Amino acid sequence: MTDIADVLLVHGGTPLEGEIRVRGAKNLVPKAMVAALLGSEPSRLRNVPDIRDVRVVRGLLQLHGVTVSSGEEPGELVLDPTRVESANVADIDAHAGSSRIPILFCGPLLHRLGHAFIPGLGGCDIGGRPIDFHFDVLRRFGATIDKRADGQYLEAPRGLRGCKIQLPYPSVGSTEQVLLTAVLAEGVTELTNAAVEPEIEDLICVLQKMGAIISMDTDRTIRITGVDKLGGYTHRAIPDRLEAASWASAALATEGNIYVRGAQQRSMMTFLNTFRKVGGAFEIDDQGIRFWHPGGPLNAIALETDVHPGFQTDWQQPLVVALTQASGLSIVHETVYESRLGFTSALNQMGAHIQLYRECLGGSACRFGQRNFLHSAVVSGPTKLQGADLVIPDLRGGFSYLIAALAAQGTSRVHGIDLINRGYENFMDKLEGLGAHIELPRKDAEPAPAVA
Image 1 (cartoon, rainbow, N blue to C red):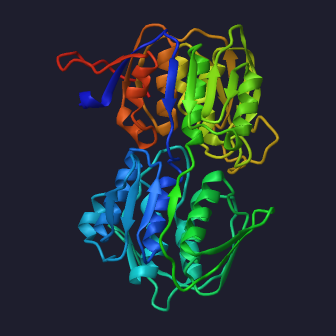
Image 2 (cartoon, rainbow, N blue to C red):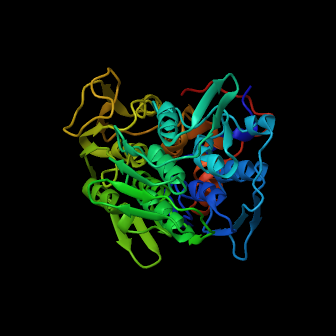
């Protein structure tokens, strides 16, 4: 039976108008918290959002003896790692399945304790994100790994040493793993074909503040010279460009007007260009970006996702909802995650016309080649969306369902809304502040069957 607290009723057809604020990036803040494990002194992290991934990492840090407390300003955490200790396996295992971030604890714990335990991992089901490569990387540094039924046991009997690593794909998670492991490893680590997302650069800034020596070349090569000791840091996390783009797409799909305080132009330039091509309008000032639908028809476009500085895969799903309201045929080629277009089946049940294809409908290189995945879409519009019962499949797909429900006529019943808390801080309060008509169902309401 569905938990009624995990269901949201959305009464659509009203433009979203008003102001919301985005705080620190989900793809940076938890990783910066893990980095504090490497230090010999306390660290201060500011602009921290109240999201589930942050709470998961906070719990794991505390299990390992890190004191985590609130700072002087709202959204500030003080992390004191001076008494790091081994954690109880059962306690760690209680976090299994709640996040993929525990894999990034490996390097720091090996440096601090000489061993680590990593439980089973969760995260969004949007395609293959194999953890085996993380372990391959750690073995290159000198770690030994014992795979057991309850998780992975790691040791570094001879310490960790720098090495040369070439990524087959510029994976964000793998790049983070190398950075968090190499900074205290003996010697020099050279990482080629690295991810260079803004959140990666911000993590490098955190590590440099702690005393790390890291250089980035223009050819996606990162060199890390290991040091003997790291201190603490004081850092304000970059704003969440992925959340900002989600609200921009919500403004476009609902014919609304949303000022996203905290949004920054530099990290969103590729999205802003695409937003303008579709027919959206925006205005940038020192405090944020205003996004709105200027009236008239939206334009169909051809779109391909890519690693930074390309169009981010996390921007794709929310924007596809807006493309259902564009005139003509839009083509979307998802090159990063093979299952990320699965959410469109529910949009079709709401009245959208979206056809998926196994072929690469575009010229950009695909992470998974011609392996028979439905990873290209043709969106025919505009189509009127109707309310429906929906089951949230993943974080970005879930927010996309909310956008579709808000743009639709009638009422939608959205199941699994807790998943959205992984990356969107206080999203229901923000929606209500923008004029959305949402409510939690009555306890005596009869549940209806839902579609994914």
